[in-house]
Length: 111
Image (cartoon, rainbow, N blue to C red):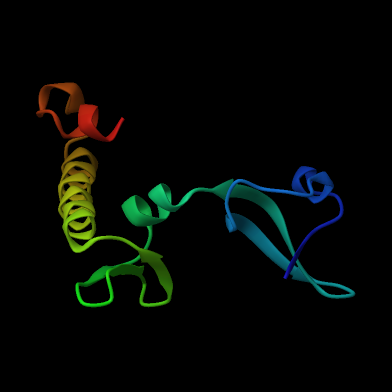
């Protein structure tokens, strides 16, 4: 895949991270992505697919294919933080009037 020539990201030669999220993938002369945004590993760990901690390998995987090196303690902490964030988001979906600032320190910790 390549960044579409009309994308603002197509002009850049270097990115802070190798990870991108995108809205649209098209095939013309080759496969391009449009409406892309570079992301660091943190959003992938907090909002991506299922997390799996591999203690012996000292890695954490997202969706069983994105792999990051991490000491087991850090990987487990990310998994726990992700679970708390998922709970808060689900609670907010179920109770739109909920003031997240009043639910505890999780949001402050993430931000």
